[in-house]
Length: 317
Image 1: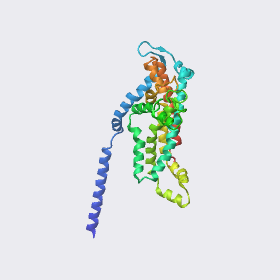
Image 2: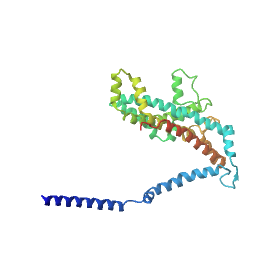
Image 3: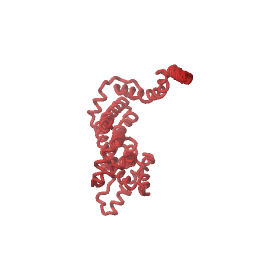
Image 4: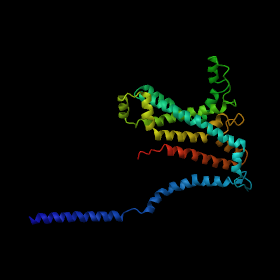
């Protein structure tokens, strides 16, 4: 009876020795902390060169009066003061804020209704067609979209032809050339572009909602509207936050759609900070002023986007 005991003890001691040797070997092969930084270093270098350095240079240029070629002169905070006191520059910021209604509020609200409808008919061919048609603006280049909408909204475009055919010829006008309708018309183009993106994002979020929640709500007598308000919208908190953040940034930093469709006109009715920066830097040779406006725009984007991210953060954990 002693031999089996000795053998079992030997085997236990051997296994313990192997475990100790393996743990010692693992401790000897533990990767130092500086090795991990070597893997991160290329990304950090690229980010520093192409993001942080341009931001730092923009802040530096904003402190000078400079035409981009000759000698610069110190301006201090004078360029920033002019951004908020010059009526044209400040009006461009207000136009960008107004575009938030068209670029963000309208697409997100419509996307919630459309995505909820598509979810209910998810197994039909109509749902596939709807997703494809709504996502098409994300595939079409924005320059081409701007040109197409310029034709549609011109004085002889399809929109005015339909209005005249319906007996509403008195309403017809050059939508992008009228001071009162130019900015809303640009907003409609932006809403059309961003509607599909918001719908797809919300649809992906709806696919993660537990169907048992809807079944329990129906057993309690809840209708479609009650399900939408009490289950769908609260469950899409993070997705809605992403949609609002992306669309608000698109409104504040809008450039391509405005440049192609109106170039900031008529007058300055559709002038936005991105386009104003372009004109100041490359047409009027006011690099310092353009840099100051760019810094103000960056700060404005952060001031708007960060609270949205905080409000829509998932706090269930």
